Amino acid sequence: MIAKTSRSMLALYSGIATLLILVFVLFTYLFATGQKNWWLQLFQVKVLFIPMIFYLLAISIVVGISIFVLLSFTQKRLLAPIEEKMRLLANGNLESKTLNENMPLSASNKELFNMDNDIHQIKEKLKEMSSELQILNARPQVVDGQTKEEILENERHRLARELHDSVSQQLFAAMMMMSALNEQAIKTDAPEVQRKQLAMVSDIINASQSEMRALLLHLRPVTLEGKSLKQGIEQLLRELQTKIKISLKWEIEDLVMPNSIEDQLFRVVQELLSNTLRHAKAEELEVYLNLIDQNILLRVMDDGVGFDPEKQQQKAGSYGLMNIRERITGVGGTLKIISFKNQGTSVEIKIPLLKEVVS
Image 1 (spheres, rainbow, N blue to C red):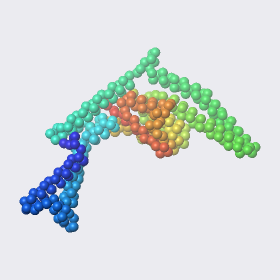
Image 2: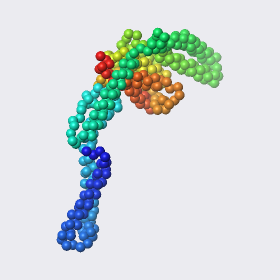
Image 3: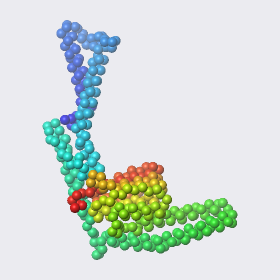
């Protein structure tokens, strides 16, 4: 098996070796026939007006290229199973049948067998770590007689109630007053500059109301409250549809999973919908929740303004993505965000549904 020497170097060596062998054979023939200055024959003897040396070089190059192609094909065929397993491992497909298949040991692929064995051990360690994380996340953390989730839930409800009773009502009153002022300005034929300023203030208040709706949506539905994850997500989507004009499409499977994963996924969806409402300026939103190869797959896509994920993570005060990443990592999952300016955003979350945790 080719492990230490590159294919290109082997192809180069093969071409050079072929050229030397051809020159040696030709020298032997010419020497045996008693011809002197045999090396001149390489340039003087022509076939179709081309010196013989160029034929020897061409044959050597063809042999080198053929060796390179053959080695590339052989190496690709041998490494294809390893590459596929590495891809599955990177994507978190720990329960995939392909990943669980063992490579047969033989003299020609002993190194590949060792690599395959290492991948299998890494997979088992990842499964063990994911299982421990999910079990640990399911244990309630008690502080002064209350669980951490109960404390957060009470605080969220308090903030939502205060925002609704104070700021939200004041914004609504301000919007009504601005509407009256706009009508009055039109009736009294106020200057154009004044009407533009009033319209600008109205837009600012309207944007603040949208921001407040997003905050209330984010704070209020803290738990599933006895509903399934499918019902909870669908309720969030319908509520979002009443807040803004947006085209929604969803496909949510009714999956059986640990309560800890269910709760974290619900909170993540809540966070993503809140971000869409506040920042994305999207016209279309799609949400999918499926079970694929023993992996819970959540995908949320919009056609909004998009952003740079790397810059957003480094941005001070960017808690949304940080919270989502921490929640998903806490249950042994992976998060992949693809977003470009003015081209929308796609968020893909994958969580292994381990049998030992479900049971």
